[in-house]
Amino acid sequence: MMRSLLPFQFYTLPPSHHHHHHLLLKHSPNLLLSPVQTFRSPVSLPTPSVQKPSSSFTSFRRYCKLPVQDIRSSMQSRPSSGEIHVITGPMFAGKTTALIRRVQAEQSNGRNVAMIKSDKDTRYGLDAIVTHDGTKMPCMALPELSLFRERLGVESYNKLDVIGIDEAQFFEDLYDFCCNAADRDRKTVIVAGLDGDFLRRRFGTVLDIIPLADTVTKLTATCEFCGQHAFFTLRKTKETQTELIGGADVYMPVCRQHYVDGQLVMEATRIVLDAERPAVV
Ligand SMILES: [Zn+2]
Image 1 (cartoon, rainbow, N blue to C red):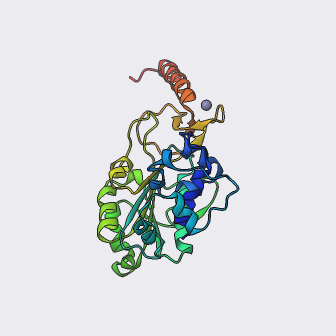
Image 2 (image 1 turned 90 degrees about the horizontal axis):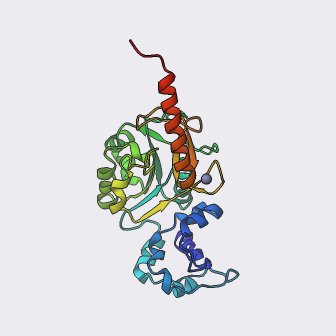
Image 3 (image 1 turned 180 degrees about the vertical axis):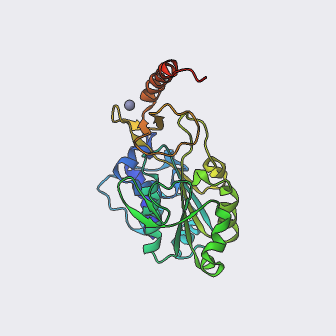
């Protein structure tokens, strides 16, 4: 129930502000994971004062243009249809933290949850998802999602309500899995993963499921140079392959300006390093 009421708090922001996502994230990452459909007609929404209590169903209805049916179905403990929610953004944006919070919230509402991650990322071991700040949750590490149902057991799978997927960009079969889980099996699927690589090109499979998703949340990190919102990941090393798994030793979050500056510096460094390297005979 809380989940369907949370979006209401969005309206305490001035309606003229166009960066709801980034602003809100700073204060409360949880809010961002509320359904995005509340943004459908932001212009026509009234702006209640910040002090106004916003936790009653009546006041929610007053400001929400959603049909009653939508609200009712989202308040049922077991929804009749599946859902797909995507959490994306650069590295260090708190995607995994947001995913864990969301899945744990579902769990505390009495729903059966499971967490999956790619077995490509072995930085923290394979049996748990660990955030950069140390939050942990048990998970199943897999090379592909199609193995999940069998590995978990069909009976357990059928009892599942919520499936969280971390490092989702690595799963080639993300689209098919999400489609089946949400459409056919009526699961809520919450997906966290990168949208782009260190050159800001599309990366992996997360972008493929945007057309399937109920909500999409793009999180931001904090620029290591200036502290502004960071939308991109800068690679600090001279490696140039697209897939290079690493943490703060290899990558840093940067704003647009410092991404552009940083790329120039990295390019210059690579040229110098290449020039200094002895010729291979
Ligand atoms: Zn910056």
